Length: 375
Image 1 (cartoon, rainbow, N blue to C red):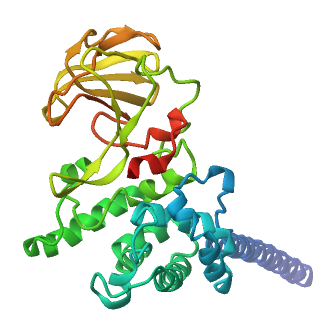
Image 2: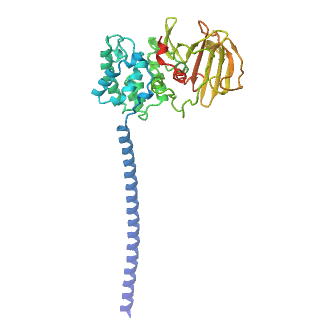
Image 3: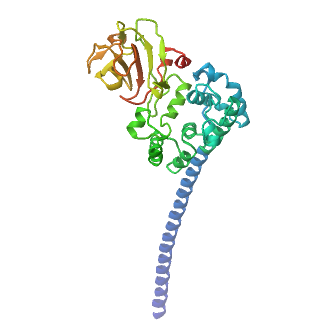
């Protein structure tokens, strides 16, 4: 009897031990599966991050077609020279970008069309021939392009700001944004503004107190690569046919961009058409009047908004529409004049994405040659 009891006890102990062992085995197996799942997840995340880094490092450069390039004949004379120098750097696909850069820097005029003297020797005027300017300017562009991981916008802004902007951007995500350009300019301007070397010219620079370099440089260059280049963040180009703003043949007397006014450099945010004080001004697009009144240097000003774009008509002698009024393309809205900061009758017209910033060159929209602005 006692033998049977002992045997039953041993069997019960063995069974209990087996159950405990199975329990612990199941727990251990569960832990192992969780660890394996965690390893797989971490490996996937690391692989994704590596892929992103590789994608950024090997991003295919943007190549702009000849059809999109709109620069003056003064700039186009350097196409072969620029292409040859870029070929040495294995960057032939960036020829049109550099041509647009030259258009912004000099319009193709002078002995230093790429304005490369300062980057070469720290002062203006040390380059004395276009060939030298292009040779050094392209070499500098290529160096910046590679440092910027082939980000065209970061390259262009760094060409204007200097290489320190690349380090600044890489510390803040590695990709160009307009806001980073503004914040860098603000930071640098606080360091150098007492020297009086840098001054605000563009309305947007004054607004942000970002007067170091040109915060609009990227848009300024890229506007020469398509007639409807957009300010960053916008979703579509200006579409449709424009109605003529005047009844007389359009004669552009001043173009978009930098110019000399009263002996000082000025940034012209639109284009000017010659007209008389008896000429009627017509809306070039349908929309809603967002401003009709006096506005400082603009004089008598009308602004009409359609979608994301605003068209401005300035220096009028009379306004025939009111704020909030719906306007059809071709409708008479005012009379040509010379109010505000003006030296004679003309129509100043702008295309922009907000009331006082986001300007683009209107000339291509009217099928006007850009080099007319340099007469």
